[in-house]
Length: 346
Image 1 (cartoon, one colour):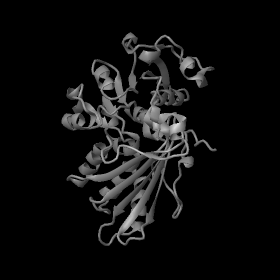
Image 2 (cartoon, helix red, strand yellow; image 1 turned 90 degrees about the vertical axis):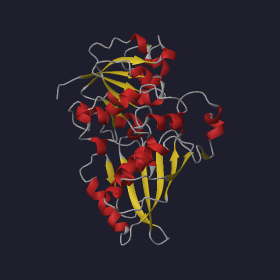
Image 3 (spheres, one colour; image 1 turned 120 degrees about the vertical axis):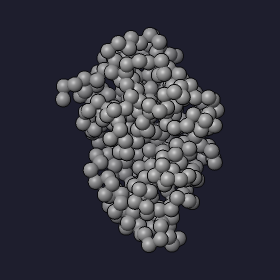
């Protein structure tokens, strides 16, 4: 297709913004028109990200300096609150937001978990929760696609088909998650220094991580009632990648084979979600640098329980890649456009 989607990327100096640019450069239908990074305004993209030294890209500007005329889509790669505050002022471009600002349906829930009033509650009804494999029918008409967080992306891809098929219980769901350090963002923090994270694993957000209500919101919709999960994330000493081990209770008479069959059926035509051969464990190295997701199901030694393991790249399928996947469907493009890079190994 010859259609060009003219895009702006807000927050291009962060990890998600830079990875979005990396993916967009190979997309046959994307033209990068504007890149913003308020703290780095006036610099070239290559000054901030040396791996773009050979690529002609727009210079970094402040967001309020962007000429929005003729821009078709804006990717918001900004922190929560800052994203909605800016995007709420735009008229014209369709919005693909990678922050948390439009993921939660209820403004009070957002305030409870993020510590501030929602900057643009009037826009929440316009936002589609952009877990692409479950939003494909809604995205073509959407003005705002709220891209899920990386942890919810992995958890929901594994759990939603099992909820839809009525195969697992809605209680005692335990998610232990591991993420590379890029998931903590690029800002300078003592806890993210090399000597702090190397040769160690750190749990954080224990008992109250901000992605919990997002996962519970989407599971509750499928359960037609409230679902509460136990979720513990861990920071591991690698740049990118995410793996979740999820323990669920089987409904009476259901087996691990039933869970595998449901996942296999649900994702048979999905280009990026893959059920591995029986007995093979997912690993982050299977998906590194790609928009792919791999998963599998195993029997627990405790009768009536099963273990679901899922791996994604937190910056691609968990963020920028899924954002482009959403954009593709919003603009009637092939879902896989610009996203067929094979995983990087080693």
